Amino acid sequence: MREVLVSGEVDPPDLVELVSKWFRKATIISISRCSIEYSGRATSTAREAPRLIILKKDGTLLIHEAVGRDPLNWQPKSEIYARKVDDETAEIRAVRTSPKEEVLVRVRGRSWILIADLGSVGLSLFGSEDDLVDELSRNPSLILGGATLIAREVSTPYGRVDLLLRDSSGNLVVVEVKRSRADVEAAYQLHRYVEYYRRLGLNTTGVLVAPEVSGQAVKYLGDHGLRFVKLKYPLK
Image (cartoon, rainbow, N blue to C red; front, side):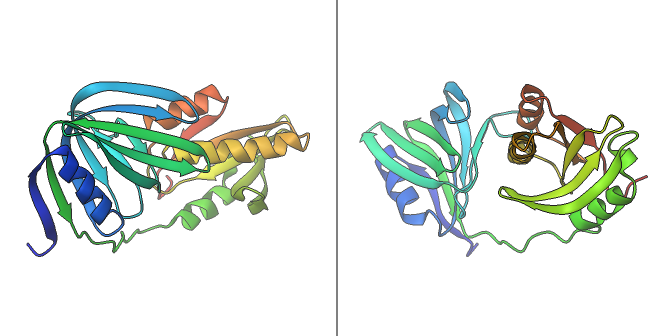
């Protein structure tokens, strides 16, 4: 296959060289024995074990274990830094500045690596996110019983709010809509919108609407008093 650029087993120094060479030029896939440390909006650690590591061209890092669809750790659109610790150990760091986050992957021993030139043609959706927002703006009670629409596509310093509703008690409800599976980034964005309106002195809550949601997003929503509503397009 012409799309496969490199494949085979490598030692940690060679892994560092390949990551440094091909980052942002191709997709890098590695099966490695590694430990993981995350710091940022929270902290977490994962002890050493064999795992699947994926580095995409845009800086996205995904680390998978043997079961489950969701990655054990992930980091979107990061700067990736690789360095040799010694002949048996390498480190891969995925760093973001806004918000400030870092995932440190410490690889020990030989890895199996595949570097490939993958496509980025995207997915053709039947029913866009805008279509879903249109329907919800006409039927806000699908999100919250008794809610009424205030406005849609409202600009804030943190981005554009999909829908603003008012609940039956007169409180403001900020709604973030996702056409496909929502991850923790969507939950974090919703929280930023809610905090913005709260700082303006308004009693505000938030709802994330999507057909599916990640476990990390559910936890983040719960920790901040926000809700998830499961809705799939077309609405029934």
